[in-house]
Amino acid sequence: MEEAAWQRVKEVFHEAVEYAGTERDAVVQTACGDNQAVFNEVSELLASHDENERIRRLAADRPGSASASGPYALP
Image 1 (cartoon, rainbow, N blue to C red):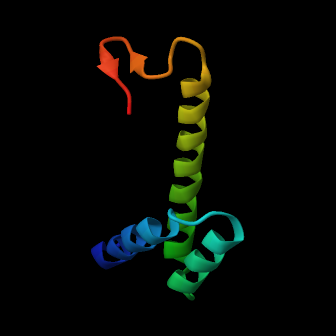
Image 2 (cartoon, rainbow, N blue to C red):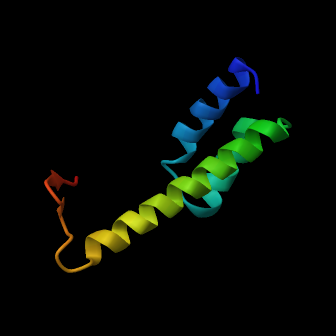
């Protein structure tokens, strides 16, 4: 993917990550227009981001792991 396309992917991702569900889908679709490559990349990044957030929340909910992991404090 060319640099300009990657820049667009980053822009769309950072805009869309603030939304959820159908609102997010509409933001991505509108921002990407007919550019299927950018749409696919943004969709994959958002799915990965959502999965990471889900895992982070699950880990935070476990007893004894709410705010620290070894010597490191987690936000």
